[in-house]
Image (cartoon, rainbow, N blue to C red; front, side, top):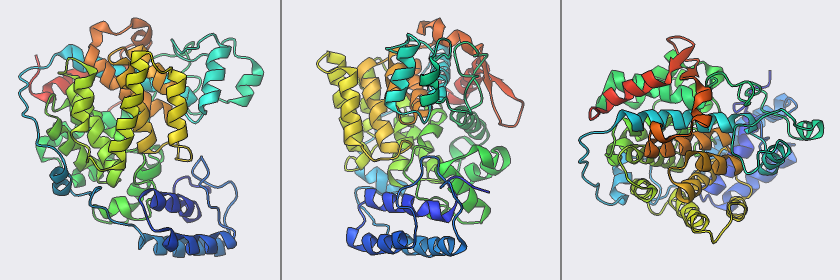
Length: 455
């Protein structure tokens, strides 16, 4: 059986990449990598997360030995700590939270925006940027202005860029009947359950228990799959995030952030603290900061008057010397140029892809930079924000969901274009316990009660 994101021989090339991204010494890595390669081991992780052919017993045994060696090479960085107190020491003083009320309309808009953005990106997940453009052009949808469709798509284009088999056809325009099940919506539903049960007393162990009780193992991926294995192996937090987990800075934590933000409207430091408790189960460094950043954006989006206000609030919870802070600043700079008309969207995406060439398509850093760019460029224009983010490629459904959440919260449900929201039919399919579907309005009502400052 070929298990994605789990087999030792597939973790090895991902671990080499992770260590280099974190600044490990090349002199420490090169001899190990040469020995691994000479034995026939892959040096690049397959996009699917698993090599196509089974490893020999000898290669798998070597992989386990190599992973043990590499575990001793993880560098430390004062600029990129994992502990909450060390992170806070690097941040500016927390702004006082003075919000007395947040409207249901904005929370509802945030839930709708997350669903819409995820749905737009869902069928083209794993398709590269050029393929997304070819599909959209071939169906008279470029620039993207509606959900993707197979109607009129030439056979040669469809063969060249096959749809994500898990998503099509339920996420194509002609077939949409509510929001299909997706991990980008399962995690917010689970977070809502968790925060309703535990509130400010939430612990990372509570999150781990909830995963075991509510999440099918086959519906988590990358860092979450590694952490799930570590939980079952009775490893303590934060070892759940570090043991045999080369995906520890990938996007999985960022997609779990939204409810932690919505539960603390306008209190971005509290939102980030809640998100940190969640993220550290499976992530380290910039993987943690990614969830903190997204939670802060979601928190601010419910009360802010502008996208600059939202993005500035997000900046305040990211360690300023981190690689994520640099990536967000780069994305915002490009977004300002797009918004000002001095740079086209295509040129901005060219620069993003050049900057992060070789980085995995589900990493936190490149996707956060794209998200910052899309939001800075288009603010609360939900259609423009999600279309730009999805056109950028990489993790299309996850980035679409995050930027859609922020834009939807900033705009409010009443201002969202019905051509995007009506196909949802107020329904989200889910694999969470409690039934196969959730009402989006009911989720928003629960979130409003959770925030404690609604009307």
